[in-house]
Length: 413
Ligand code: FES
Ligand SMILES: [Fe+2]
Image (cartoon, rainbow, N blue to C red):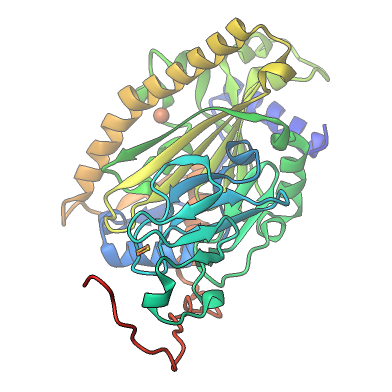
């Protein structure tokens, strides 16, 4: 294990102690919050600009764009983007907007493109974003093509994920954002060797923080999921490691109960726990015995009361698994169905209700308790970002048409 085994073992044993004593790790404060944090458009804009426009967040898994010219299109909080694998194997992202008159240059959610060809007047761009062709260029007028390529969004590939800072001209340094410890832990997971075997994006009429909070919370399990998740994991018994910006929580599975009376000694208790790594600002990586799950929450661009949740199951490819194709398909289909069913049938109705509850001017002050530790880390770090004005903001360059360009007679009107 290349991550901190000593800390990890301490955490796992603390989770066991919590089950024995009906306790959990305590955050030092109780936090108060207001309904308008989840409905106010001004607050939502600050989050888009100062969170997603300032720090790296995960756009997709590397395996989704495995080969040169593979692309995915993503609705990020500030920009519609195209993420595309370059010929040299690196990854770039661009705003998905034609620099002629702004049509989407790529309408498909994913694919492989030799070039991006705008459907409106057929301008085309190379997959490195350069403006390649202006149709009927002799009639259009002179254009500085260097300045009229697709607008690039800062992108970095690290630990099997593509990360972006959703703002033209921003700096990106994923290792620095993760910090040394989390960077080392993610490296140890070798997520770049896994495949995105199942994924989906789901749009909800719910603020992104409400949805994300539900997945950072081990307090609701036995109440919201009595016949599903609660059969497998303990409620309100987590051991947390706060990395300062990101955090991990270790939740005891019910199978750990066999060690309630007996001392497990030095035994590796990994099979008896689930570990979650909250990666600020909007992803949680769940480490399961034979795979990982990634949950990503993104605010809508316009409406604070709407967001998208993306789910991914990351697992060894069929070849790497050594399984038969039939088993491989069956296991991941089943896994995916369980994940979706619990979320759609049990969490989402409650969270939609929570969003409606926030639509009351007099909802009153609400609270996060000492036991809701990871939620505290999220809201603490979010508050820091929202209070910080991003530095050195550049504007995507204006169209620069040569001053000497002459209008050309246009044949055919
Ligand atoms: S808007 Fe793309 S070619 Fe005109
Ligand atoms: Fe839940």
